[in-house]
Length: 220
Ligand SMILES: Cc1cc2nc3c(=O)[nH]c(=O)nc-3n(C[C@H](O)[C@H](O)[C@H](O)COP(=O)(O)O)c2cc1C
Image 1 (cartoon, rainbow, N blue to C red):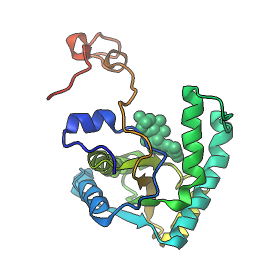
Image 2 (cartoon, rainbow, N blue to C red):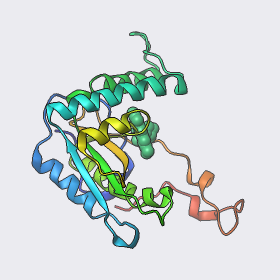
Image 3 (cartoon, rainbow, N blue to C red):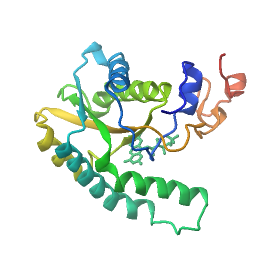
Image 4 (cartoon, protein in one colour):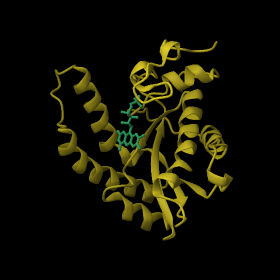
């Protein structure tokens, strides 16, 4: 069990990605609350043309493990990643170590596939906008309950056909994302993000936002 919080500001600001998990299984009640929160998200025209497919049978975990391996083969050269030496304790080494552990042990965890119906009238970006809010709600509900989670792109790359076949995703549905969940080994903690001043402008692209960017803000 991880650290819980009912404070939405604390949940949002400390919901960093967790990639290392204990062996304790995720119970139905905790997972069901995450799924409920996902279902409360907005979607275009309130269409709710989504499916959340929980993957936890031994067969589906094998598929998840294979997709994770494919993903690792793709991202290693893209991000210039390699397995860190045991005595390297730099931030990068710690991040990479956690990422390798997640991919190596992927087949041991419960995960959820987020699938969105494809409407040819909408762009893929717009369709993504109708399901990523559900994933964010899921992540925040996980954080609130002390559960750790990692959104993955494993359904992209070569994992897509694997998931599609194993789950039986209809041809007119798009696999948007995949979230691994588990009880954290380690802690939730503050997310690291750019300062508001670098990303907010007022009225025009380069205009200073003034006090709107004086943060960090929170309400308590
Ligand atoms: C669309 C998307 C895809 C992601 N895919 C992966 C992934 O395949 N593997 C992974 O370890 N993390 C993945 N992440 C997690 C991001 O790396 C992470 O959210 C980001 O580095 C910020 O770190 P933080 O969540 O700890 O603040 C993904 C996040 C998003 C939004």
